[in-house]
Image (cartoon, rainbow, N blue to C red; front, side, top):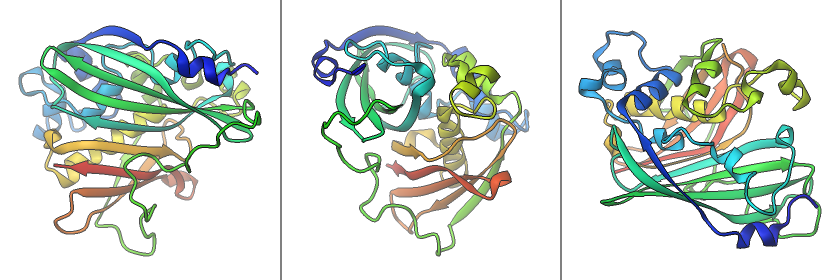
Length: 295
């Protein structure tokens, strides 16, 4: 079996020093669609260095190192074909406001390996801290198709950490807010400059080998676009109010498609539930079990 669960779980954590600048933050923001309209004051807080606010999801690319999906494949005990790998879910807990420039230590390790029958599920946890203490904790859930069935622990259901027991929002209830955000045909090409150069998002031949008609948008790009929509729509752009953000990647987005982002928030609640779909494909689900917790 290409995945040796015991070896992966017992492997020493990998620790790296990461650093980033305001330009890295600006590039990330542009990669998730910020800056339209270019002179809008609400957009300038994402693009202009003199008033830069950092969207917490920047943590997933800070340091421009390998994304969690790729990092997990370099862990001892994991030897699989990248074309069979899918990003299944992502969670992020923010301990302090992410600075516009900084240096931190990022420590990553596999915390779980589950047997889902037709696939294996790896959970990679990364904790980042600087001289002042913890900054953020993130978890990437990585599916490896065709690597299950060894009789291991199936693990919990597909719900991401932070999801309420009731699961998805009641689709019969009208969302409190609905917004649409278009993606550009070159969105994946721009986003990958922040560090995730998986050929699935750029190379048509690789995408076909992975089972897709054409390159797909990074799940973490959709993840960032969605959080920005929530912050701009419900928090008046106050990025400091985001405490945690979790999602399950329920489907793909093709560059050029439009995201429909529905938000449910009870009055006085510090929890926003979100559902994201692709408009052009009959509201095909893209992000599910999505929760943003606020301070």
